[in-house]
Image: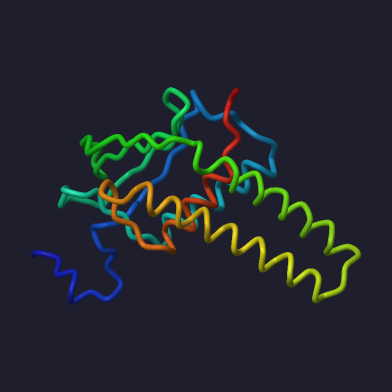
Length: 167
């Protein structure tokens, strides 16, 4: 019997990620807190995403993130392991945003201890704005390569921020 996705409201669409793996050879292991942050980011991403490599009608997909020649590598396969594409993105457009994002996050966590609620809210708005900026850069850099929605870009950007690259 054929499974009719339209008849099953709980069925997951094929244009999505079902697994995300970090390349251990290029991405350093972190502290227990960093590893927990990574695992949470991956879980959130796999739970809810729209991910469709342009020009490929298969899916669902598996994604392996790593570094190749100082570029962020998106190695994509089908759920069964068939190679689909590898896209390399320069890290340069992300460096300033990630640096600023971490600075604001540090300010936010320091403010929680001593600042007024309005100051904490203002810092948090700045943090969310930087997160949105990074997500939009990701959408723009993947345009024509991988079709993702903004929420998926936000989850991927969270994961990119959770990475601690070797070197």
